[in-house]
Length: 341
Image (tube, rainbow, N blue to C red; front, side, top):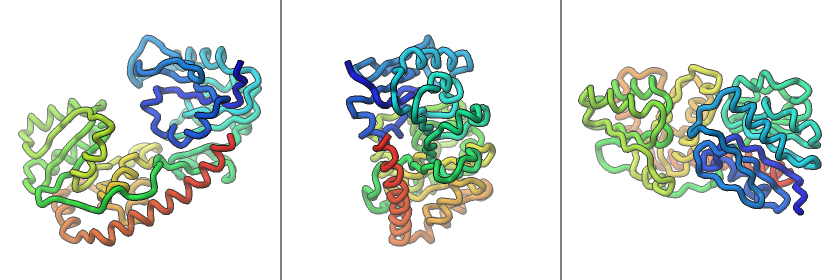
């Protein structure tokens, strides 16, 4: 019989949690157990994995769903486990009663959520470390600095290639889950009919269908939607792009503090980003010189064309390398803590 020393509480399918790569060495230890909420029907129970399923498929879940998941956690967590890593503040809020006997509790936050405010104070005091994907989250966490560890959503620190951009038209690509409707609508409205810029969307998401309908209605021949793609094709999609659309409006606490996966993917593939001013993402892109930061969508086509007219590939690549060195430095500290869990 295996005695489990560490448990990972995963409130989503692992295919939707790429940041588990950062915990790879700890997860692969024989005395590690994963409790996984299978939201997309792609999980299976094995020696070190216990899967929870409900009658829904997809991301959307409510309070009662989390209560039922917490009951599953309480039932399956070993009594004498030493360490538990909980992914997301929502999961910790609902599952904390199952962790009262655990010696070391760790929290991993990839997206800021208001649920953190409702976690009882005595539970927060028991958190050994909080791993955050954006240092700005610490403004809301309000724990001593030494208990907060920065973990980028990045697992490689060397660029895959040099900057390459084919001749006009400029290919402005959105690659990933298409969520923000308003900002992408403004991009479509601003760039429709601009022959020098193609607006490309790769991926599915809540906003994709409606945006595509609007683009078709407007007769936007330079706007294309390609739907979901295979993860193995992602590098090629970045390689074929001129600029990566990572516009996130600073309309919420999460939007003002997050760093998107597209930030890291763009830098690793030597592609400049298009981002919005007013959030941490915009601050990072501006600080390291990683792309074009806009404050509004007026004359967007002129801003993009002017950016590339003045573009210096050598300087840009140096900026990418400086950013990746910073990422590597932060991640070395993260791995030291994680591998000792």
